[in-house]
Length: 232
Ligand code: 9D3
Image (cartoon, protein in one colour):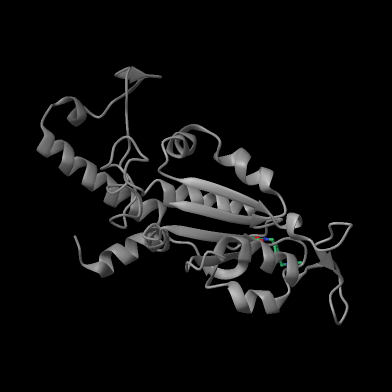
């Protein structure tokens, strides 16, 4: 999967994905990250990319031309690549959406800054708008990294254990069961006896029970969905 990120702060993308799992995925060619500095496409000698909003108001608006030209530099070879604008006004990212995006061969992630981007270029290039939740950030760079992270781990070979991406939180609509490792006693707390029994069937049943109980307590909203889904 190739991720193109259109941004005024390309170092925020490179820095965040140059570690551990994503670094290994990039090194082994499973993912590729192409961070493009929109400022490199500025047409004026001062390299400006923003201007005052027509109609007045606070702040600056990113101009259509450098955004369009940076986008055009990616799609000029004629291929159709889904373009996603990261914006607080978008649909909230979900695991279902992440799964859908992981089916694409390439993605273009457009990050906004200042008071937004000239609407006319958005009309021409954006296929989908995505938010990462109802809170206010300074720009779309961290959301772009979140999408890269969430999508990459669904690509076969990116995670060591290829079953682990499928059997965890949100996959069946339940939270994960609690985990324990050595020592058997820590701060006077012991590991649940059943996990030491070696009875895999019993262990599986206990874990499922714990998942359901946890979801009921910690995420009653997910628990309601789980009940309504009828998959118990
Ligand atoms: C002055 C602009 N704001 C009016 C209240 C709106 C605004 C636009 C852009 C506020 C923040 C931002 C920067 N955020 C993002 O670009 C962003 C974002 C976010 O802030 N929250 C959740 N998801 C996302 S995706 C992109």
